[in-house]
Amino acid sequence: MPEPDPEAIIAALLPATGIPVDPAWRAAVAANLRVAGTIAAALQSFPLSDEVEPAPVFEPGR
Image 1 (tube, rainbow, N blue to C red):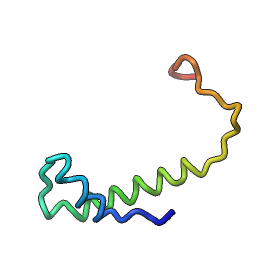
Image 2: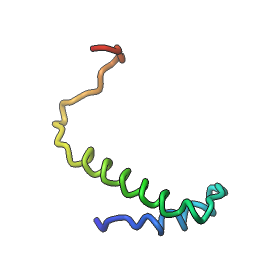
Image 3: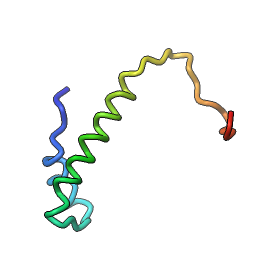
């Protein structure tokens, strides 16, 4: 799968969401999308067996 282009994502999503973004912020938004993509790729590459199930109840501190 090709690496996503943050600028293309911004260009596609901004009109659909109607969220105004100052042009001066575009570079920072693109940088954050790159970081989010790197984190997502690391999470998706982590091997999990089919038997793994989520915890039925979240218990903080355990």
